Image (cartoon, rainbow, N blue to C red; front, side, top):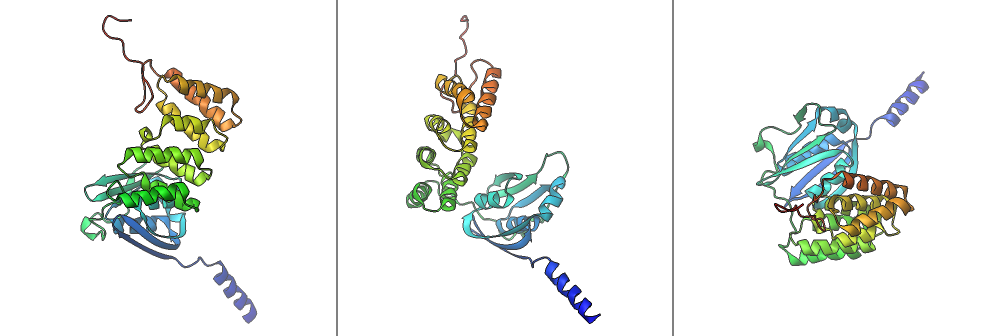
Length: 292
């Protein structure tokens, strides 16, 4: 009997959940985190408290965020980069106030109610007054270092983080040139994914010619399909872009790229004449009175 009880006790120990550990600190718009087996909802609460932001989740996401476990650590990375890394492929929105990040909202389909995870009393938020880091042209040396790392860093994760942080710069020309060079030389899928994530919010900074060249290159199909989607958003009536899309739809070796190009062409055909997205090469001008 004693042997049986001992075996049961050992089994219980072996199947017990690993101990949880969580530490979050914020300083000058950057987060440091150490987490072991920590529920994602609890991680988000601690981050909200550290940066002085509300964390609101759709009730339909409750179970997912409670079950998801975080085992990672990082030090001194921008808040937005940290959130992207932790929340992963889930849908979320970040809004800003006068003191920086004001709210982080995680949702699924946006059809159910929501609730705030953090305290409703802003005085209990330990990080109030934290401002987001902005390498934005304020420190030329820092921007230069980020650009150098994004283009030439030996570690792909470091290149991706540098690119993410550099995208906050107010120097649109420098960011655009960096985006173009990354498209020309980068082969790592993580870095390219980061580029398209940040570029989606500032498409006018990505040179169209660089996008066209990348979309027609020999890189993997997934990032090239993303380039095609971005090209479609900015195609307007530009003949070079439309010609490329037709060629990709008919002849590209990647099914993903062919399908993305076909979808893009279909959407462009449905667009009213003369319409163009911001940042497109050209747009057909509306006829003046009396012209047809």
